[in-house]
Every structure is written in structure tokens, then in C-alpha cells.
Amino acid sequence: MNERDQNIGRRKFLKLCGCSLALLPVALIATDRAVAQGKAKKEAVQYQDTPKNGQKCADCQLFTPPDGCQVVEGKISPEGWCSLFVVKQS
Image 1 (cartoon, one colour):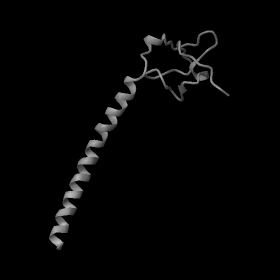
Image 2 (cartoon, rainbow, N blue to C red):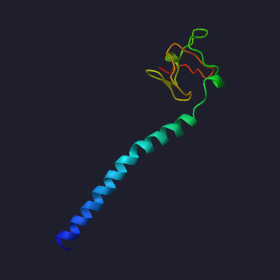
Image 3 (cartoon, rainbow, N blue to C red):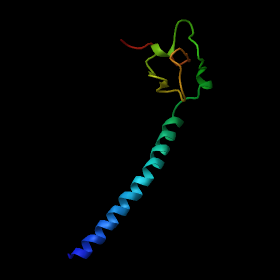
Image 4 (cartoon, rainbow, N blue to C red):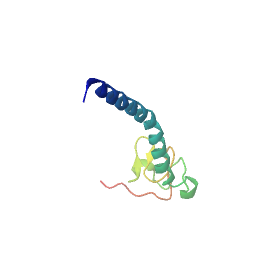
């Protein structure tokens, strides 16, 4: 292989890398949406921003600090509550 062929190979490689990097944010957004679609809506689980009967999201096994939940979509208050509450295991 001569030097000219190697340069063309490098150019193609760099173009492919550039295109791949440009598509990365699109792939990440699509992944986030797919994950969110698998979660329950707040209304469906009777979510509220206040505790209920001494139970609150911060004490739930499913709560993901600082403001997330493994099974309920959107931002979740640590002081909130929903019908899927599971006592956090020590």
C-alpha cells in the first residue's frame, strides 16, 4: 500500500468518527426516552409531594437520590409518597 492510499483511509476513518460523535447525543436521548417509557406515571401510582402515614420516598427502597425513582417517572420529592412504597432494607 502506498502513502496516498493510507491518507485516504485516514480521511475516511476521521469522517466516520466525526459522524459517530455527531449521532451520539441522538442515541442517548432515544435511550433516555425508552427508559422513561418503562416507568409508571405519577397519577397511576397516586404520587403526592407529601408523606403519608409516616411513609416518604426517602425511606423507600425504590427512591434514587437526589430526586428520582426506579419505577416512577419524573422528579420525585424525598418527602413524597406513592402507592408503590417499599420500606428500604437496612
